[in-house]
Length: 476
Image (tube, rainbow, N blue to C red; front, top):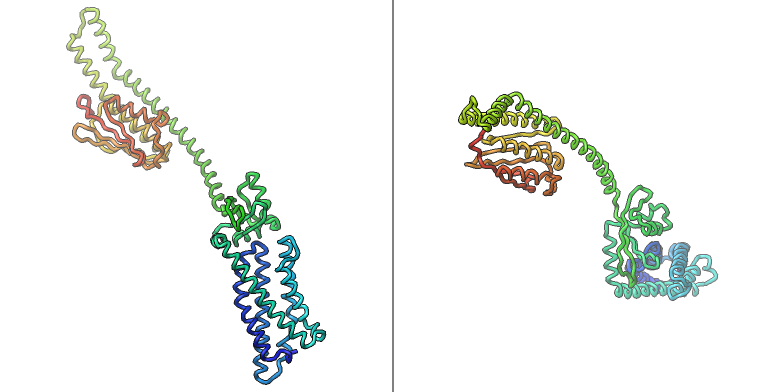
């Protein structure tokens, strides 16, 4: 048979197959764009085998030509076609896949596939003796011509299709680059596209044969998160679009495994923090009640032990004067005694406030909160008592709502004014002017003693107070 293919015929056939090589490579990408899903793989395998077929024919013809040029007769390797059994199988596979996808058996492409298969079968070695030399030459020419025509046909129709669907092609190229799994499904349920990430997800699906149909049913039932056999979790999100002139839905599958794990850990930590917060609130409530009880006890002890006798004397003297009876005390002496009692009461009360401030600092220290008072100022009893109540409320809010472990009250005098700032190191909490936060109560206390009250949430919920210096009943 090698003598049947002379030098000139080999050159002609070699030229034809050399033309087929670049066309086949280019067509692999163009036709691969038209076919999606599992048909994309079938189509690429089919054209890759066709490319190898053309390449083998090219090598046989070229090296056979070189051997003839050297005046020798080419061996059986130059015309043996037993390897054609592989492209015959891929053509039959493509014939079946196309017919199944289109829903009918015959069209121009399937007819072209049929004639290709017929010629390749007749070129198998078993038919050498039946065909003769002329038959073999005719089949070789028909084979080369049909392959060149087929490649040109696929190239033209693919180019026309690409020109009509340029926007679809650009969109699909972008979808291929997406880090998420993307799956495009037409309204009738036909799969139009899936990128490499989506194919990996399908591979590890509980039932890969369903290719996500079970996930669509789950989504319609309200389950937006699915899981694969590896334990990875994916959030499903649909978006309608138009692809290949058809209304379809692009399903996005984003990996939320780590996010959901962190969310579960955060929820567990939130429950723990809530429990701790309840314990802290109970401790603060206990401290508040204890301080109030201690204030009442100290006041009662002070009145009983220190002022009982003087108050009794004043009471008797007032009654005597009211009845216009003689009294051992003159009016001037009575007034002096009342003023003396007021001064002693003032000093005693302020000493009690100092003890209360110390108790307050110790109480907060017991729960791990450092309460610090810096600076000095001349304050009356009423001013210092109001300031104590405001500090207690502010420190409690900072711990309860801001998680603070350090609270400082800084005082300083500027002329006839006393400037006070209460700051903390907690997280600035939402500012709400209501009784629940104690803001209104603190403002009213400052108004009663003629001071101003301001809250600056941008600076960690800083509380700024302004008072007038007290000259009448200032601390010693």
